[in-house]
Amino acid sequence: MDKLKFWMKASRFRVLPVMVVPVILGALGAYAWDGAFRPFLFLVTLLGAASAHLFSNMINDLWDFRNGVDMVAKETAAAISTNSGLLAGGVLSEKKFGIVTWAFFVVALLCGVTVSLYSGWWALVLGALGALIAYFYVAPPLKFGYRGKGYSELAILLSFGILPVMGTYYVQVEQFGYRPLLLSLPVGLLTTLILFNHHFLHWQADRQSGKRTLVVVWGEKKALAFSRLLAVLAYLSLIVCAALQVLPWYALLAVLTAIPLFRVYGNMKHENESRAYLPLMGASLQASIRCGGLMALALLLQGLLQ
Image (cartoon, rainbow, N blue to C red; front, side, top):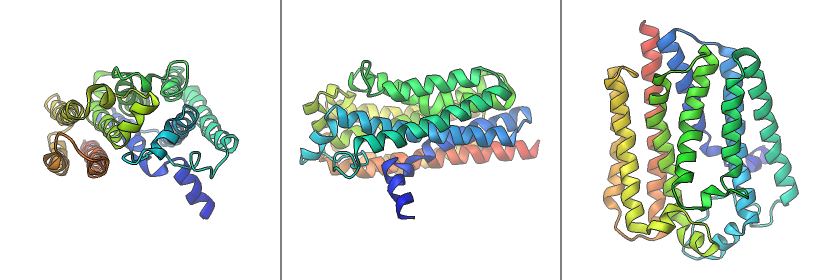
């Protein structure tokens, strides 16, 4: 049990719901719209997506450590580190950390091959795209998460919204459509918001280490305004989904999950200490999971009533 808890910390297992929810949404979309549900393929897809997410978490930690970002964050008093801290703290060797990291990748790859044998090669293509995004987010030569031009935000929207929702839907019904694309936007934008807000916790250290996030490039005031905009866009996309009957009307109850989030925004100033962003991080994570969960329940109910 101690080893399990240790590796859960190393892989940042606690944030896994941000990947699980989009996969569930994609499967429930197929059930509600097309009356299709293939349990075996759903479970394999879920395992593959979860493994890919844990690989993404760990490969990011690995390259942030190699690029010196973790050490700068550790040495910067105002910064709050968001990685596992096991590499920077010398608890784990880089070699052992890397072995477990790539083991998650192998599991994700095997799951991708399995579902592609049943549903077609597009499933593997979407999975491969997600893997490339995960690896080159901080790995050279691209390191697009360091470039501060919005590439990382687009990557998160794709990896935690569009790709898992559309990919899971495709595995279930072997076709694409506009509905899973629209369905992916509320939860995808809210997850993008989580990743965007976490940069506030250590943006001074990022600046010192050469990691140019949008918070570093724009500054705290402008970045906080963009954070609010992302939240507004997420809930507007939910309303659009209901208006276009991608979601049933009662899915609009998920809008209520915005209330705690915007209460936190109301307490923020133009300039804040790093710790002041911890409640915003927590509220962002809760909004993403709760909103996605209510969307999933609405789709399940719609499917059962048909």
